[in-house]
Structures are given as structure tokens and as C-alpha cells.
Amino acid sequence: MKKITVQNMDGTMDEVDLVSSFPVKDINRNFVILSKGESLSEGMSKVYISEVIEENPGVYKLVGISDESIWDRVKQAMKEIVQGG
Image (cartoon, rainbow, N blue to C red):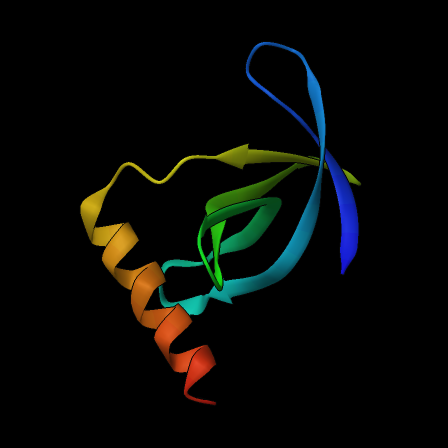
């Protein structure tokens, strides 16, 4: 898995695994799935899903998903990816 470095809101840096990235074309936004290697339970890993915005060429910002309708669309896109669509 590709490792990337993200800056937390408190200014600290974390190295995380980039699990996947994907566009949601009907809302014209891009999202990432990240992992810090944390386990929820046996066989289950905790992942983080965020919108990613390119602020400047090669400089990206992660934005939390707070709008329920966007979150529903992201979940639908992830289902389609898993099902091969």
C-alpha cells in the first residue's frame, strides 16, 4: 500500500496508508480511504474516508464529510466499487 503523510488539525504529521481513492462523478468530487493500521476487532480495520481537494498543484487538503446527502452518495460509490461497477 502507498504511504502518504497527512497534517492533522493540530499541526502534527501522520504517515498513513492510502487504501483507495475514487471520484464521485455525479457530484464532481474526489475521495480517499485511509488507514492508520488501527484494528476495530479481529479481522476488521478502522479506515477514514475524506474528500480530497487539490489546493495547488501537488498540494492536497483532506475535508471531512459533514453533509448527509454527500455521505450517502460516497457510500453508494464505494458499494459500486466493491461490486465491480
